[in-house]
Image 1 (cartoon, rainbow, N blue to C red):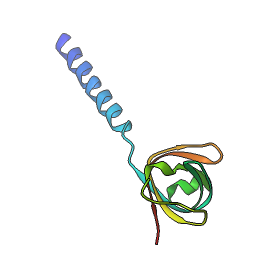
Image 2 (cartoon, rainbow, N blue to C red):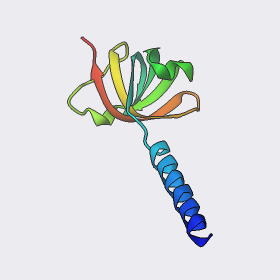
Image 3 (tube, rainbow, N blue to C red):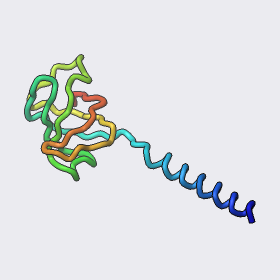
Image 4 (spheres, rainbow, N blue to C red):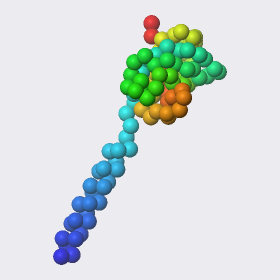
Length: 102
């Protein structure tokens, strides 16, 4: 009886560990859009394409992640972010990279 209970307990523990470890991982995501305004090191981007579009139409991003480019209002960009979206207005993301589209 004791062995049986220990096996059940170990099985449940392994299942819980497997479930918790897979749910915590987020994958990077990306979207394209046009810069509408720039304020210091951040920009408001009108989203044109990407999964984030289902959460809203505008997003604030950090331009400082790409110090090699000079961004201007009207530029089309591709933004990579960590997958998490803060649902405020405008939306906010943790910007990983931002690149100009030629």
